[in-house]
Image 1 (tube, rainbow, N blue to C red):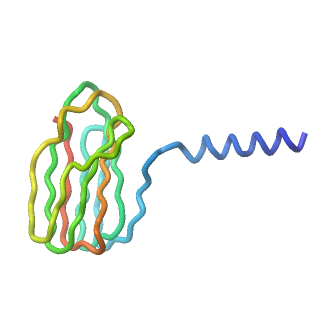
Image 2: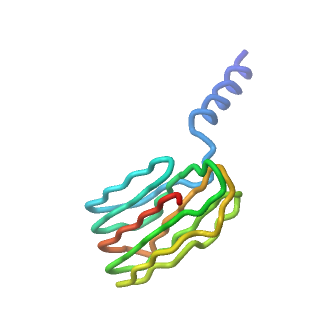
Image 3: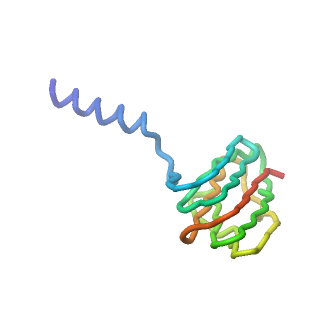
Length: 128
């Protein structure tokens, strides 16, 4: 009885904790963000760490993005099929705007990873 209760407890823990491959972990000051099925953004005064967004492509398409930083640098990755792929790099004082390659329908993860502390940043992602 004890053994089946502990197996049931472990199973419940796994189901409740989810199975996301990516997790957000960050420290931030004046940080505003949003994640909807078809768009996401983050805007901050200071950010350090990793922010993960989850978008849903209803059909094959691209993710349009823009990013800018005043200080610091960051990499932005996407994952639509189990492989983390570089989308763009953003350096101090730089602004980028483009679109991803065509991605298949389904869940797309956008991962923003800061290299140390970043300041005055704005990252936007939109399904086009």
